[in-house]
Amino acid sequence: MEYIFWFVFFIIAYTFLGYGVVAYMLVRIKGARSRPAGISSDDALPALTLVIPAYNELDCLPAKVENSLSLLYPSAKYSILFVTEGSTDGSDAYLMGVPEVEVMGGMERRGKIEAINRAMRQIDTPIVVFTDANTLLNPEALLNIVRHYADPAVAAVAGEKRVLSLESDAAAGAGEGIYWKYESFLKKLDTDLQTVVGAAGELFSMRTSLYQPVEPDTILDDFMISLRLAAQEYRVVYEPEAFALEDPSYSVQEELKRKVRIAAGGFQSIVRLRYLLNPLRYGLLSFQYVSHRVLRWAVTPFCLPLLLFLNFGLWQTEDMYKALLLGQLTFYGMATVGMLLENRKVKVKLFFIPFYFCFMNYAVWLGLFRYLRGGQSGVWEKVKRAGASAGN
Image: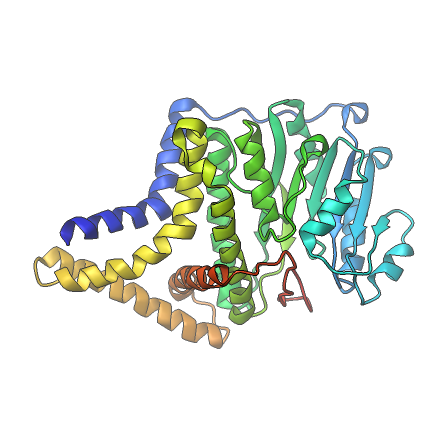
């Protein structure tokens, strides 16, 4: 039982802390990659298309249109395409009144990835940038993205997702922000080590010529696209100076809905990308993929209750196990307090961090059950956002 306990303990510690330490040490030994210089003239900039899938996002569209038109990029080389995928809230009519943007409509809602598949059949610019309707990009985002494409080994560039956090936000929103800050740190290490293992769809770009249609029931399309490119020995680069701002989920119930779907998509992706589990074929990419994604999505959430169960079986053997059990019970007690405070919209970091950690891992369990039930759909369920009436 002791051997199993420490093995499980190691997996948990490695997943959430150890990989970051190992990746940092490897980058220090290897040396961080130099940052690409900005492109010196407008003439050298590649033409690009900003693609924005938007289903019933009329409340978000004025701000998104204004933001998209304000981005720093030569207008002669910059196109904006909204794919409204069967919207029924007047989105088409509103966008048709904006001469600077193109609109691809449709009578039927088939989901975000089908909207992207349709859009990619008509795009002829060498670079395409995907972003969500409920996010706002920083003015230099496009310029900071395209500078990486001077390297022919770079197939895609992922921006950073930043979650706005206000004092009035739910604990889930605050926890979400901390999670993405840590995820950003790991993505910087992944980029310096070799490649990002999964991009955030809030801001993701790629070479148009490398796009391959994605299965219509795919849940995590951005993740699948970026990993398939990495499997072809291209690099996917993380650019933190290109970022998308997004409101947090309105409540923990809304965030749970989103997390469960993402978890189900994680299991779907692991099954479809199972060939990446072969280190003899994919080497460092397999190491990054297993360490950063597979363990977190498919292993560690199930190790956490096992560790607590084993600790109960060992606590009488040595004082060390008593201390570890006390530590676990204290942590889960703090998570419970965090949950109770969240219901009152009280933000106390000491408690909402343990709460959000448990919350994410609980969502993985629910996501597994959802995946095993089958019938996955690429159609996203709307999630209500703080500061907005709805969001993807």
